[in-house]
Image (tube, rainbow, N blue to C red; front, side, top):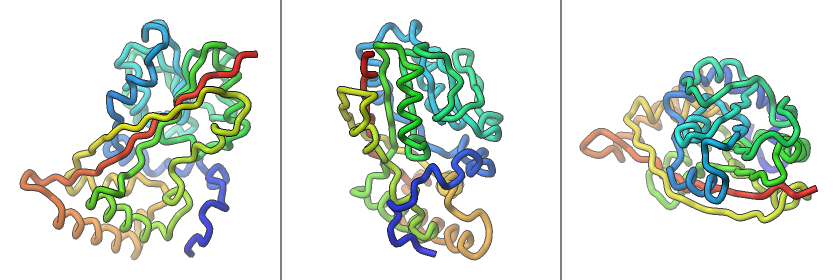
Amino acid sequence: MNQTNPDATPLHTLNPLSRFSDRAGDYVKYRPSYPASAIDIILEGLAPPSQLIAADIGAGTGISSRLLALRDVNVIAIEPNAAMREVAEPHPRVEFRDGTAEVTNIADASVDLVTCFQAFHWFNPEPTLLEFRRILKQSGRLALVWNNRDLNDEFTAEYSRVIRTASSNHPAEARMKSVEPLLTTSYFVNMREYTFVYRQELDLTGLIGRAMSSSYLPRKGTVNQQLISALQELYQRFCDESGFVYMVYSTSVHLADAIKN
């Protein structure tokens, strides 16, 4: 059934803690990374990375956690889904913990940075922002990051059309970037936004895997078969001589500072 008003459904009510359990394998292989410039701006002006402790909330399979760790940041990766934690590639500076955005079980005022990559829209915003403020130090920073598909790119726009059809305009597909609660909260100040371009190179297997990593798309049945067929046709239309298509993202980084008590 189509969602006539997707904004009416809060995503945190749609079983976010376990909905990715059967997608972990595709997620770890086919989800996009993030541009180095996004990590640069998140860390800019903070202490030297090796002195920082970051809490990466909704860490999934650790894509963003590892990007921070590769800059020498010590990362506490909070992820409630056991299947996602189990397939995560380990890194000596990343410690995975079971927890949620609303209840991280991290000590008061103990982290320098809280990050959410492609995850904040699944959280209940009010208790989540309060929890983020609680665990951040007085000088702490919050970073909310999304890879938003760039609909100005023809291939990416066509892919998005196919996904919207297959998902029956699922509210998550209609509302990925959800920064409004940060703009109105009393827990953070000095909000600013930065935008970067990121391109993901995909062969046919990767294109299908990228779609299947989305929790709101069917993994079997008639709609799944129609989706695979549409993706194969899309790939044939747009692949280059090397056999790749390119998903273009506008990566948005929203930074804010913890309000001082």
